[in-house]
Length: 160
Image 1 (cartoon, rainbow, N blue to C red):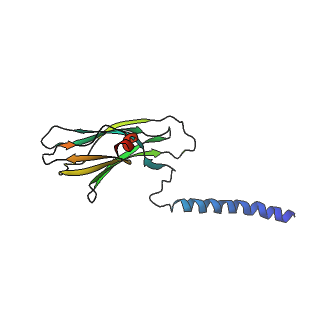
Image 2: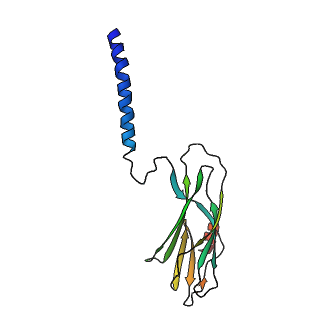
Image 3: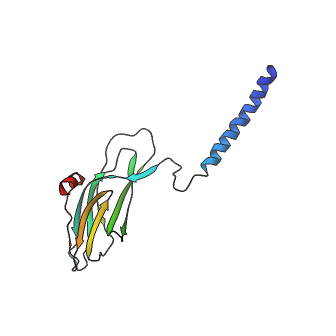
């Protein structure tokens, strides 16, 4: 019985070291989309969108966006946009990054910023999609923009 206790004492540190090495090696094989620090990105909640245009010969379209970033563990990460030509949709994604912490303060951070749409936009009818809140947008032959109101997602049901 005394011999088995000494074998356990000498083998246990070796097994613990091997287990730690295996876990460290597995962590280095994470895919590029995974964040090793546990943080993750997600679209913030958008509460309203207002369209604004400049009064120049080539009008620029900007979106005045209000929303909620999240809790005390979330910060604004980035704003990305692209145009889906098949559906004439201008997609804007406003992303927050959560630290991955398990416990966070429950204080909502308000978001209010203006985003310049990539342009110029050719004449036509478009749909602007900001984190799932959509609005129609029309650009006429002279470049004038119309069709987007200063309303939030709660009025979608009343419109349709």
